[in-house]
Image (cartoon, rainbow, N blue to C red; front, side, top):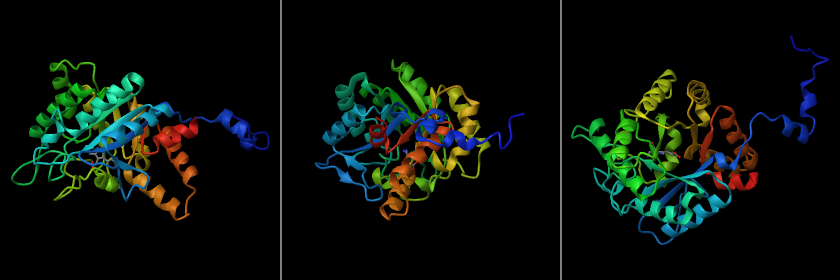
Length: 327
Ligand code: PBG
C-alpha cells in the first residue's frame, strides 16, 4: 500500500515548473504533428476560410511556401486536400494526372523530398458536384462498391504523383483492401495507408466543408460515417482496416472522442493518429477572439489531452504554430 497523507503529499511534485516538467507523463513533439493543408485550383491569391481564421485555401505557390515553413518548424507530415476548379458526378478531378492534388503533390515532392511525409487525403467529396464521398445511385444512395473502384484509381494517381501515404477518409466498406490491391498492382507496394478507420458523422466538420467546398447538396453522411452514440463499432472498423492492410489507423474527430482513442490505442499495435478537426479549431479560435479562453493555453491543453488519450500523432491546423513554440 502506498503512503497516506500527511506522509504522501502529491503537491510536492507540482511545486515548481522544473518539477512539473521532469514528472510530466505526456509530451508534445513537433514530429508527431501533421498539418492539414488545402490547395485550390485556379486562384491567384490564397483565400481565407471565414470559419477557420488563420487557415487558407492555398495557391500552388503559397502551398509550397507554407509547406516549407511547416517542415522548417519540424512538423512530421503534411496531409493535402484539393479543391478542383471543376466538379462532376464521379469526381473526375480526383484521379486526373493534372488534378490539383496530383499537381501539388508533385510540387511538394520536388521541393521537400524525404524531409517530410506527404500524405494525400483520399476521398471523393472534394471532387464531386453533389459533395458526397462516393458515387450516388439514381435513388440517392451512395454505391459502396462502385465507389471503391474510384478510390482505387485515385490512390494510384496520388501515389504516382508522390504521396508516401494515402489516407482514405470516405468510410466505404472495403476501401482499405481495394486501395491496397490497386497500389500493389501498380507497383506502389511501398506506399502506405493511413486509414481513417474511426470516423464519426460529426457536426465538428462544419468549417471543413467551407474549406474544401464540399458540403453535400442533399442529405448528410450518416449512412456511411459512424453514429456518435457507438463505441464498440469503432474497434470493429479498426480491425477490418488492419485485416485489409492499413499500416496506421486514425480516430476522428479527436476532442469529443478521447474515450475511443484510448480504446483503439490499447487494442492495436500500429501507430494511431487522431484528427483535431476544423470545428475543434473553430471553437478555440472563436472563444479566444471573444476573450473567453486563453488561446495558447487552450491549444496546448487540447493537444496534450489528445496525446494523453493515446494518439501517437495528431493532425491539427495548429501544427506549424505549435511546432515553432515547442522549438
Ligand atoms: C472527407 C473529409 C472530411 C474531413 C476530412 N476528410 C469531411 C467530412 O467527412 O465531411 C474533415 C476534416 C475537418 O473537419 O477538419 N474527405
